[in-house]
Length: 429
Ligand SMILES: *Cc1c(COP(=O)(O)O)cnc(C)c1O
Image (cartoon, rainbow, N blue to C red; front, side, top):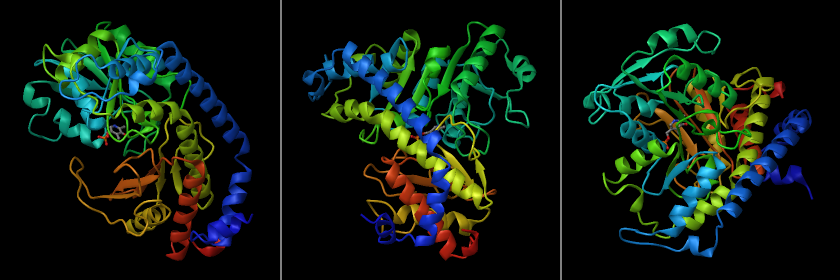
């Protein structure tokens, strides 16, 4: 067996491959810790599936109204158990993460209420949902106001300003776990728990929603175990394990999740409707695989951070830093760098490997975005992908990889493109 050869036939030069091996030699211990986390979370998922008595009847398709859908109800029990929450809404009718977050917010905020983000600006697509950038049907149009407290210079919470921002109208606090398209740190579940406790100490009746995108199964605890009234995410990210072809979830307190169901379907109908159309096996099996898939993605992120950091690029988080999500930002400093990086990721993909990503306007984003994704599920970012808005500091956000080996190849291939394009001097390797 000649590993060098397999990389060479996939467009990675021996010099780039050897550079990668030197980086990897320093990462063995961290990879072991990641494997242990996967083992722990695998146990959590299996236990939930056992305790909820998942069986073949759960995989049956329903159509039409989808009344008495056993598989759908059981899956929601499993999600609630895995996330340590009272209730869950897990549906293919939730079209994406933004949709899930929109449902959670609009179900639990009424006209006159105020939404507060104590962690700076939310993810790009949420800005139109909230109405920070005016948009038809935004929360602002429905009379929900918004306030924001930015993070301190060092990325920590500005507690005095948060206390001052919580007023009589403040109803719901939104906390984004992952950095999204910002170069701030992502938060640990423990940090989020502290922030939740602080906000509730100021005003006990506050509701807290955590945007949990990209954070699931990275740690042993989930935000719903530390006081989040709702945790929300996308099934084409971590918890879908790469197999779910669509969907979103909301887990949390029963009162909140029920309102979400009424908002998603209709008042009076709630969780009782929503045919599964035969999609449930992928949801169950994807959740089952998710802890190991997330582990592979984490290894990829750490490998990328260490390769690029070694070559003098700023990476967030840093190569040696602890992880709270699967996102790795690499500041390439130029549009050309972003293009080369994405070209390499795309070229290593099992699907659409022959296309070259170019920057494009995207709905919900205010600058052009470049995206590399050669995925089995369109736009899936638990599969190996890289994307970023074309604006300073020209950072690409790299994530996913259904297997560690694919992530490794993608990163080596991205390095190769930068070397070939003269953006990294060959002698730097
Ligand atoms: C991906 C993401 C979203 C939105 O999810 P989509 O599925 O792309 O709509 C929201 N917040 C964060 C932090 C994300 O990473």
